[in-house]
Structure formats: structure tokens, C-alpha cells
Amino acid sequence: MVTTKAVTKKAPFSRRVVDHVTDELVNVLSSGETFEFKTLFAKVFEGLKLKNAVSGGEEMLRLRSYEKILKLTNCGLVKKVGKTYRALEGIETASSTHRLARLDSAILAATQAKS
Image 1 (tube, one colour):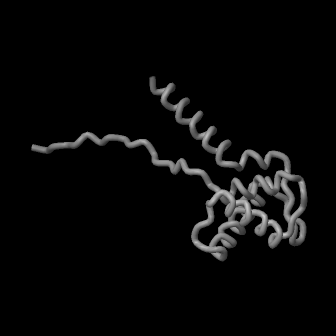
Image 2 (cartoon, rainbow, N blue to C red; image 1 turned 180 degrees about the vertical axis):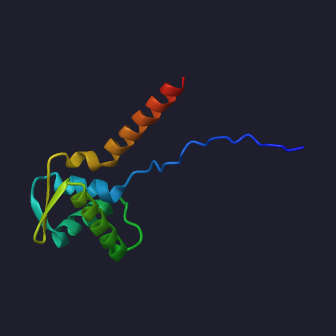
Image 3 (cartoon, rainbow, N blue to C red; image 1 turned 180 degrees about the horizontal axis):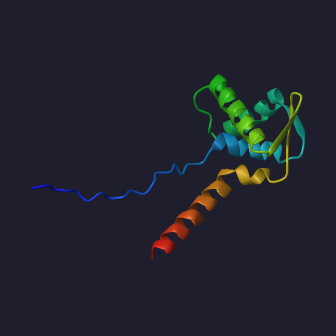
């Protein structure tokens, strides 16, 4: 006799956490100024210290910030000219509040489609 188990489909797991580094980069770049990375990181680091969101040490935070600014550049939300970075239109869409709102609306649409 062959027994089969019913396979249950699990909902995909998504991390719904706030990305403080990206949020602070968006806040600093939204001013409309052009920054070299060293100056940009100094402002981001100060903002994160005020929010008590610094973890892993300054060098690790510098690496994470550089990775995030490159991701924003590749997405077309930040323009890099030489060694300077400037926000482009739509930079606010990279913040955690917009990302989580899009995720919530996608989950809501998926659950309504199943009903």
C-alpha cells in the first residue's frame, strides 16, 4: 500500500524590518545636495547615532552604507558623478516605509485574490 502525504504550500517568508541605513541615506540625500561618500557617511553615521541605530562598529557600517549607496545607484535613484552622489527623483521610494507599504498591499491583494 502506497501512502502519500498532502503537501502544504507555505507562504513565502519576507523580512519586514526597517532598514535604518537605507532610510538614513534617503534622508540625507533628499536634501538635494551633492555629497562625496566620506561626507555622506559622516552625516549618515551621525543620524544613526542620534537614533541609537548604530551596530557592528563604524567600519562595518561604512561597508554597509557603501553597499546600499551602490544599490541605490544601480536602481537609478542616485546619480554618481566621479566621486560624488546626488539623489534623483523618486529617492523616497527606497525608504522602508514605502517598501513595507508596497509589501503590505501585495499581501492584501494576494489574500483577496484567494478569497
